[in-house]
Picture (cartoon, rainbow, N blue to C red):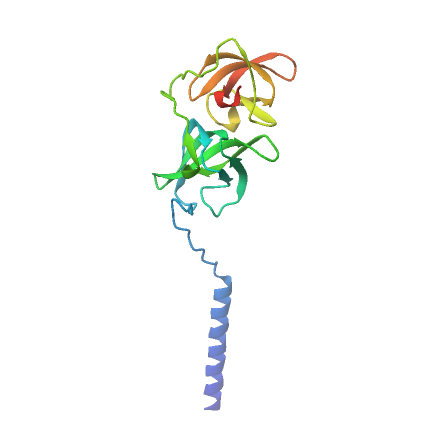
Length: 210
């Protein structure tokens, strides 16, 4: 009888240890974040970007540019009312449009371009017709214009769209460029001067020229 009791106790201890070890080794379960358009809480699953290229302006007293489409994400930049910027994409959840947009803005602290996400309630698109085709800017061909609104730098691109791969050279705030022609998506074709002093052609968004 005493022997059987000891065997039962040993079995219980073994089973308890096994369960504790299994619980310790099991991966922690992470609760998914549900989509909440408006307050801006989004899960990372099934999120895609619909590319676009449009000028916009901040209409709220200030607009936060965040790491991703949600108010739980870190603020990268704060844009004051009246700031112009370029929208480069719309955040999609399960194929449906959200109110969060990917934007290219000027860093208000360090200068240069900052990419992040901004909520539609804080800005409005600048109305332009036929943005998918060559659009007429308010800049005259054959005239020089000043790069502005970038504080430090602006890429001269090989194509009329936002893409890190199409950057040719960096233009600094205050540089002069010769406007050659209007292009699509709000861009204009310009001639600039590269680091060697040679002329180079490419595209910049008209919103950054004054």
